[in-house]
Length: 354
Image (tube, rainbow, N blue to C red):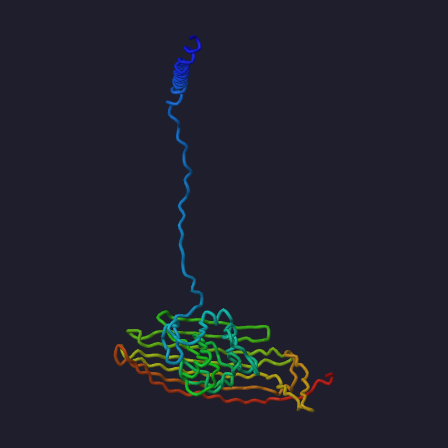
């Protein structure tokens, strides 16, 4: 009887014990809450967030020396991105930074363009992509008139130099597929230009340069740009006296009305210097050509009377007529004339040590 009573009431005893434990825990929690509550009720000072200074970000597109238009051939005034040919344009800024004294100086950083046969002391014979540039047909002035490249081309009055590579030369008719070198002259701008300069180098060159540009008339319809240079032309050959140089050019334009513009370009260049000897390969013996001696480029191998003197005259007239909003007509005429007095010694000798 006693054991049965105990078993029957055990759940009740356990439940009562569990309930008493829960009541005790609740009382302890209330006591802890009453002790902590006064402290938690006190206001807490907020932590100040750090303040960062304002940052302004600005971005600009770096254009460098990239031109926007092309003046060669039928592309005159066209956007360079719309021209379906490989064209490299050397702007006036680049010509000045490179100190370009001749044609090769102007294009020496153009990919695919090198120099052969003649150096800068006489004139520059260019090669584009391994093909020689024809000196009578492939050099153009202001996009059209062929100029003769048998004397160093002056750079003082050139605004830009453009190189059309490869088959683009066919725009100018039947000629070598090397490419076209187009020379664009300076013209008067809305901003007056007056510049005096002195060019000197370690070879004895001392040239004075002048550049003056003005727009004239009530409506600024007339424009005139004059360039000149003169002085001693140094030589890189040891023991050779300095030559001489004289240059003058004028570019004139007249805006007759909104549909007609007339342009004229005149330039004259005189140079006299001493030319290095020409070295020819000896005659083949038993089908073998013995290589000649290497020539020291700083030594005058030939006689001192081996002089090179040129007088170059270029004249060009142009009329631009706007027929309507979609059609235009260009009329051009010009002449390129070169007189050359050349006394060249050609040596042919073999290397005896070979």
